[in-house]
Image 1 (tube, rainbow, N blue to C red):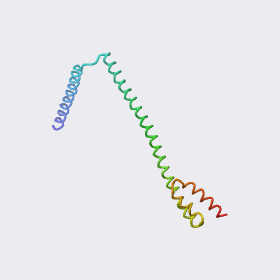
Image 2 (image 1 turned 120 degrees about the vertical axis):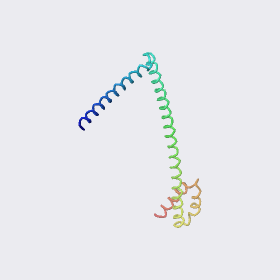
Image 3 (image 1 turned 90 degrees about the horizontal axis):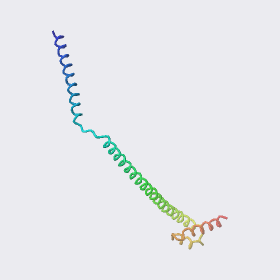
Image 4 (image 1 turned 30 degrees about the horizontal axis):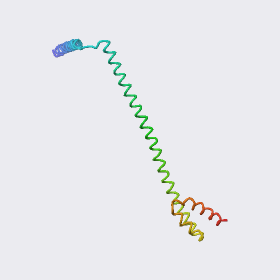
Length: 139
């Protein structure tokens, strides 16, 4: 008898499933009848409006992207150039100071020119003078 009970419950479940499916599709059909569908003219107008707004937004974003990219590129180049200028002046100053101390110890006559080397305006001239005097001392 247990087998008969199982068969009966399976048939009842299948009938309920079929009724649920049928009622679902009937409800779906009823809801779709309530929908107010746009006319072809409204559909074309709405589609054109959406495409136009998307294109305008795309153009705005593209222009802003180019503007910020160019600003960023030139801004970064200026920052890099200023950093390199600062680093080069720092390295020149340190190398000038080192060369000046070497020249002071090797050449007692050049003390006045090495004192001027600390001034940033005449640092390049002093380096050239010191290099020529050290070359003369070496020879």
